[in-house]
Length: 95
Image 1 (cartoon, rainbow, N blue to C red):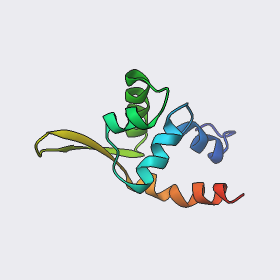
Image 2: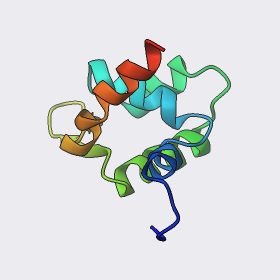
Image 3: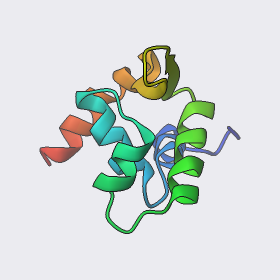
């Protein structure tokens, strides 16, 4: 960040976008899977969800886990960094 950037602005940029806040909220309560997100996020398409998941993972808010059970599938869990943001968003909800 540049010297004149506000830390809150950086946080908001991490979760900016149409689907990232909803994905983050769903991941707060349980691991999320791609097809489940596609069903839950009305109006979302495969590309937009894939992009949002990739960006959340790149920003270390989600961890991608390959579950090697049949059927093989991928789950996304909140990282420690992501979990640390939960109280911040809970306090925002109470405003």
